Image (cartoon, rainbow, N blue to C red; front, side, top):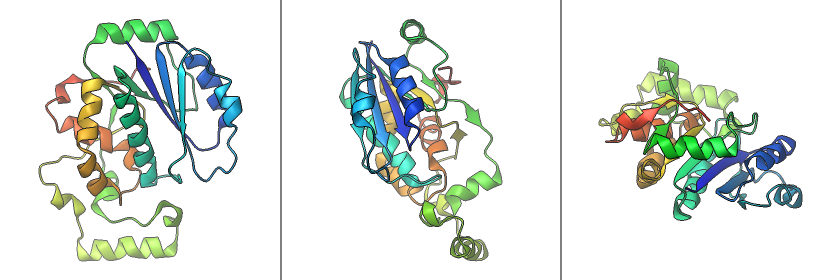
Length: 226
């Protein structure tokens, strides 16, 4: 069983090196997306952390907190992992190490079957507003113009979710573990993800659970455990 680890990173390279070292295993493929705003990432130092697994590094998107490019970067890594034949794809954060060692990861996911692991969170009216309204690019979100733009949409009763009446909005943490089938389902909904979430705020918490919980695979969800 081959595991793919998807790791978007902004600039915390010291923690990333620790994570790469921990995940290094002949059964692992590691896919890192580095914020394109970083001019000189320590590529050699990162490559030196992986000796048994396969490391792929990308830098396609400029990343800002809450921006849609976070979602696009994750989709790029997921697409590559699925194309490489990974049986499970895990999106992991760089602020902590996995709760399991590599042997435990292999044994656990071998026994769990074809599931999707992500922990659902409450969808409040404020969360719905992340998608309901058009949001300016992330680097402008705290500006007076952005607040005025959202205020005008409230007055005009803009609701982008009306374009997707068959979809219920779901929210989860940004970390997930997806079987190959669940990962394919997310990728097959790429057009919907782009259309629904490219103008949204913090869509990286929304796109995976919204796709999978509105699909025939919804009953395969369980909480994230890695």
